[in-house]
Image (tube, rainbow, N blue to C red; front, side):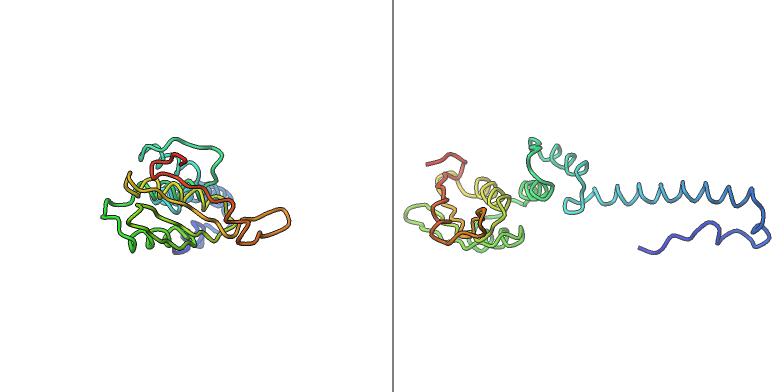
Length: 179
């Protein structure tokens, strides 16, 4: 955005040494700066990815999400985006595109005979796993189940090995119930 012109730059030069005019311009400049900040704040809250916590609360109410104060701002943004996704046919390619758009590093395999989806997740971010679970709960048909395997589970000592991460797998139906 272009730099806002300062009011003192617009005043004719013969007002340079007039105390009243300098005081008036300083006070008015503060008001204009506050107005610009308010406009930028409002404009930022018009879009999900640039919203602050107040703006995302409005979006959550708009799409019907119950506010969860334990979730961080980034997770709340991704939850809103997942709700706003257009109704498209769910294909493997589309599901992979959505997962990559949400910055989740995961591989997806589908067993059509068993109506089961296996997701191999590679992240140490617990919120990414929550976002993935929420996404799969909303997108997969009700007759499909999924298993999410996280291979990069963080421990107190650092990252765990893949075998330990696989022990943290949970199998879900697509409507959120554990199998």
